[in-house]
Length: 240
Image 1 (cartoon, rainbow, N blue to C red):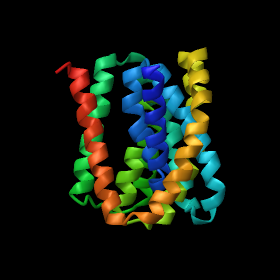
Image 2 (cartoon, helix red, strand yellow):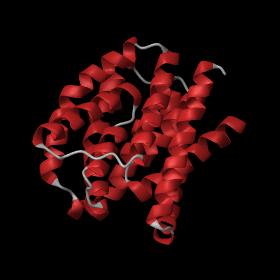
Image 3 (cartoon, one colour):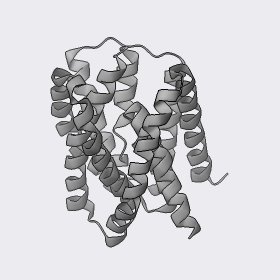
Image 4 (tube, helix red, strand yellow):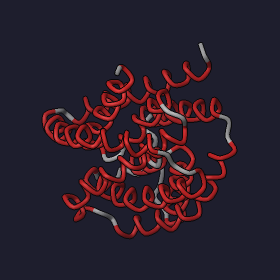
């Protein structure tokens, strides 16, 4: 019962963050789900629920999608997906968790340091490729997108909408790839089904909180949450 409660809390918090930023679900959910499930199960649950969230939200904000960048992301991700599944199949579980934690900490540090980069056509493809690789390997396409969009000062509405548009494609492809190459099980689909009401509750409350919070305060909260998640997962992986 304690495990079920913790699982639902993770899904709720991640859903709230997803509504506000467009990228938060997988970044928050995946590290903590790895504490409760095997890597294959954690990743597939994350992908299923993230796909559901993207479908639920995209119709409201589709007008803000940058389709030129989205097309480049998709083309790049097609090349990254196969490499991601190879990494997932061959990687050690502890190394896998440590890699996720380090990724989160580096991401947080770069965001705090006001990371900046110039947007180019080639970099669009590269970011898409990295996101595709990270989706099939660790279920987290968000970090490259977040860094790139933040570093290029992309307008918030465009960031959120384009990211969700990309998620619709990459999560669908990644779920199929995961099932084909690593299989699936009943626990994954049952857990995802039980989490659906919590997901929609989190999406609803997230919209309300987002309207009330100052953007600067919310960014600080996001950095703290990302940093805490990375440190918590790293300590657990190293058995400290």
